[in-house]
Length: 302
Image (tube, rainbow, N blue to C red; front, top):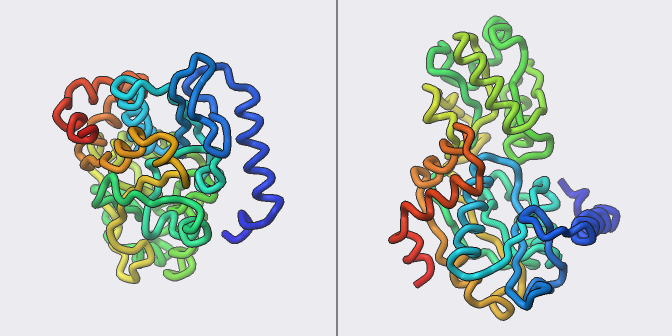
């Protein structure tokens, strides 16, 4: 993933964020000014921009952070959904102020190493996350090694259902296919599409293998299991970190202090994700969780 270091990549990211800013209409999906300029809006208030990827976990966490910044700290919050590379590059370049969506050390490790001098890592906001290959518990396969058997691979129509191309779990799965000698095609789709196909096949009792991660609502909705990874291609447990731009502490000390203390559990996140999966608007699900957990929110703001 060296390509995002090139000038063309940087120009592309800057252009994307600049165009989003130019089209700003004051909604929560607009991107804010670059170079730390989100210190005030037209009404003289405080403004901050968060970026995130379209994973169920990050939709939940970003909306919870947005709710607290708005309701408790008085910020106008712009949230911008982007791909992995633009998310990291946006914070590193100062076009975005923060993200709470950095999966480390494995999933986003390449971005972290390339850009680590250009942002501030506030540490984990959630611990004990994981990525890997996931199947329904009724599937009589327990290890990735077993997928190398042609007869086993045929049960899954020769496919692993993935998410967005370029996501960390997709890159790691490409490596796993090579390391384990699998004759399986990794199908790129989206996080939502993967979960939908999984649920449909699960309800039909069909074999299916997907790229998965926890926390995710699908583990609460279905009886699933990770395939064992004896070669440790997917690594051990992951943590989700909060990453902010340089200068945020000086420009927005109250927002920085909150982001530095923001920490919750996989169970907390799952409560929000399940509401969203059941049809709730992400902003409404986040607000419901914040309203139901005043002690935790107060601790973040002490």
